[in-house]
Image (cartoon, rainbow over all chains, first blue to last red; front, top):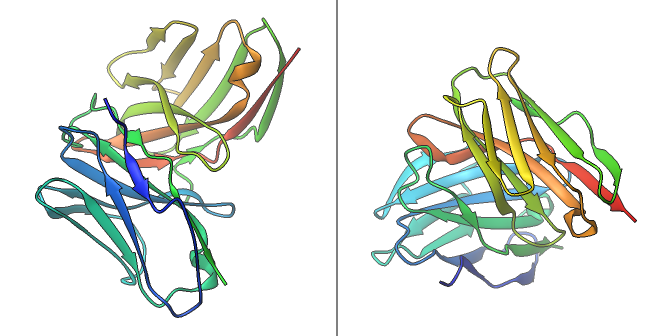
Length: 115
Length: 113
């Protein structure tokens, strides 16, 4: 079956702009989470959505937001972009995301460069 | 506060030999641990996982060992193959928040011919 799909794969934005990234989870997966990977901070959890509700949140400023639709597809938005937001943004999905044993599968990621 | 640590940034192993990647954690509440393999500019690929109620889990060439008292886990790859060359991340999660993974900093494995 199809994996986690993220679009766009690469994008360049200017400081101060906003960006929206999209994620389609594996069919049947209802939990979608987002991660940021940077050389300095590694892989960090942004937030998780389940049944259109944010269920968990990491330590990121309010400029980072997301949402989930009824078909489990998710978007994340970063407003007022800063140079430090340049990163690989990864989407992951799992069946429920709650109990151990739920394997979490990652998409290929969206490379964001802020200039 | 780095709750999951991979103290070896890199490891070089000859093809056919065993690769051992280590991971330490500080939060005793973590109850599920996973290993992912990652190539540059790609998403992590799930390899193997282990619940805190077990001390070993095997899947083909991959075995994960968990020592709860030492808060230490390791991934053994036997035999190592050139295609195993990648960055390996260990990750941990808490009960009820399986999607909120805390990742280590990664170990770059190079398997040489």
